[in-house]
Image (tube, rainbow, N blue to C red; front, side):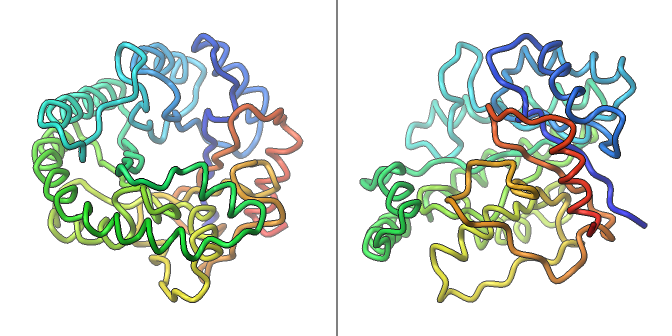
Length: 295
C-alpha cells in the first residue's frame, strides 16, 4: 500500500484571506496525489475556522491542524511552560479551543509545536553560526546546561495542562501530536521528553509527529550523538520539508536523511511542509511526490 500524502498550507503566502490561502494550496496541489491540506500554525483561530468549511466544500480531507502560534489578539500564543501561572492557564484554554475547533470540523489530529524555553543564547546567534559552518559546540554546551536547569519544572507544568487537554481531545475525538525531534536547545519538549510524556499519558490520545528535516538538522548539529529516530509506525505522521529543495529552513547543501523504513510504503500519513513564502507550484509539488514514491 502506498503512503497517504498531504501538503501543508505553509506554501501559501500570508497575509491572505482564507479563500486565497486555499486557492494557493489548490493551485500547487490540486489534481495530484495530494489528498488534502494540513493547516499550519501561522493561521489564526479565526482563519482556521473560516478555512475548514471551504476545504470540505471543495472536496478535500483536512488531515490535521496546527495549534496557532498567535493568540486571539495577534500576540504570540501563551506557552504551556511559561513561568507565569496565568500564562499557563491561558495556554491551556487556547489549546482547548483549538481541540474544540478541530472536533467541530471533523479534524482528528491537532499538532502542538515545541514551546520556547528562555535561554541567554539567542536563537538567531546559533542558527547563523550553524548556517555558515561556524563553531557551535561551545554555544550548544552553554545552552544545553541552561536548558537542563529549566527542563524539569517545564515538564511538570506541561503535564498539568496536558491532563485536561487530553480529556478534551478524547471527548471531541481528536489526537494531540507533539512535534519531534527538536534540533535547537530552546525548543521544548525534545524527543526524549516527548517519549516520557507518551509513557506518562499512555492510553490517552497523544502521539508523536516526526519531522525528517528537524531530525537531519539535529544530526548535523551533534554528529557524535547516536540517537535513533522512532520507527515510522510508532508516530502519527511524518513531515517532510525538503523533499525537492522546496524549503529554505535547512542550511544550504543539506538534504534530508533517508529512513530505514521506506516512506512511500508506510501507512503513516506523509505531510509535505513547504517553506513559507516560497514560490511553489504544481511542478515542484509533483516532483516532491515523485521523490516520496521513489521515482
